[in-house]
Figure 1: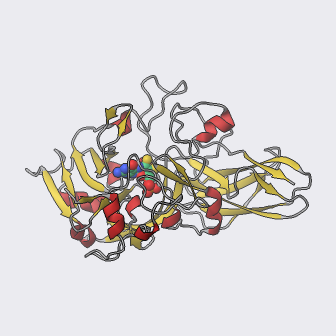
Figure 2: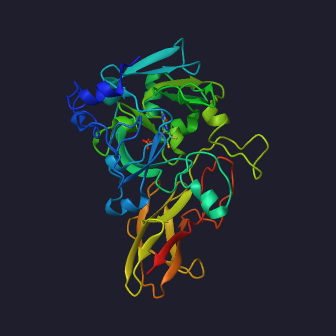
Figure 3: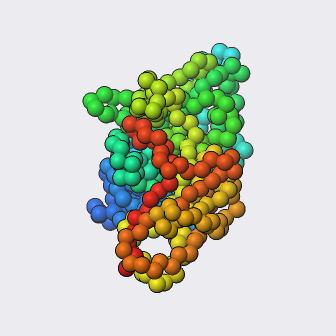
Length: 399
Ligand code: MTE
């Protein structure tokens, strides 16, 4: 078992260099004491200018991405914690790979941090987006009730992730050729909800995806993973719902038969009138979205040209086009795409607008990807508010 230190002890120890190098970025200054820019269970500071705290989670303010590049700095990246960030020590950390899906007579293999770092490194730029990103819009835009953290649009971020391929880790452990599923599990505290202890966060991943493009990351944007983002190692499952990217990775079960957990049976699948009676299949890929980098309810001056900016992304194919409407959806025109569209990444876009009449206005944006997927006018409702993909109606005032 890796050493687990209390958060307070860890905060006090944070500035000390560990045997393995610099402490992760974002550790708190122990002299700072309690302050309004903190949330229970999250280590890094959460300045209100950049984050909205939602229970054990912190949402990035989407509009503040405007002054970031194509990747999101770690200190601006949203945090989704079922419980709280465990502060682990890389020197004691072991990844245990176990289960009947290992070949020969092996039942369990341990891989240390040094061994992980010795595997051929890869760097991938990928978004992590919570399945519930945009959830609150089911209620505010479509008048439909949903349960779960009422994220607006900031439960998403992009980073350069460096680590070992999960396929190399599984081959090192001896995955059998007839294994069908793996189940990574985190080292954070068990998740207790509604009086039931559901155990540690874990979720099955089909072997085909596990061996494809998943990485066991130990660096984020060139620095050791910050504590809140999974130090010392996390999965990054490109294009899939964020819950697949298990943080503080502790063990991976490898199985010759199907696996399940509450995160694939009770949560992270579609329930509701539009879906099969027992729920849909567990969610895999994310969806597509576009949004303006402006606060909801912003005021813009009439009679001046505004250079509006935004982002668009699709987990299904590279972005092909972004259109904007400044008259509530009556007419559309192309936005200018700033970045070269790449699979699994977002693009920044711009559009100028010179409003003339004062009063309330609604801005819309709509992304089309290279596979022909287009944001619909309405998202199909599901009771837990996952995968909101509809065109966002962005309210503002012209003064
Ligand atoms: N892994 C563990 N061990 N515990 C968690 O609570 N949250 C998941 C995933 N991995 C979670 C986890 C969810 S729901 C999301 S959206 C992403 O982590 C968020 O990653 P981030 O906090 O680095 O932004």
